[in-house]
Image (cartoon, rainbow, N blue to C red; front, side):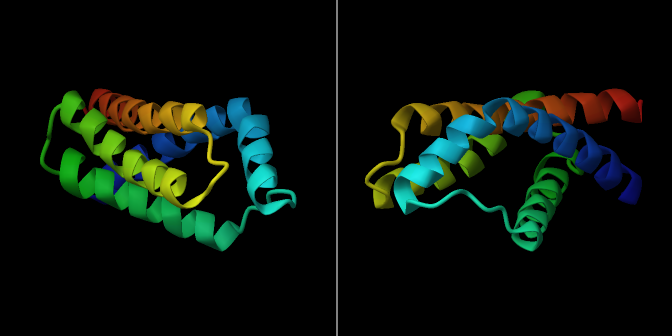
Length: 121
């Protein structure tokens, strides 16, 4: 159990940090446009968010050996709820960035699951 959580957690973090690194400027611009100040990441909150994502992926997908498609849908739903809620309450939330990030949620969970299953064999 702990090995599976650790492996999937490391994979998820690496993949997401790559995605965030590539798209950092777009996220910074969106946040600055909404709150009129630079984006400042709160490390403790970010850590808690990743704990939720990693635990959710393990509990609902990996532990039950669900399919890669199930993992994709899991990520799509999680990121989709966040993005559509943000789009609902923030006037300047970008629908393009919301769509990209929602799809990324599905891809992130699917890739993490596939790589985790591959390494667990």
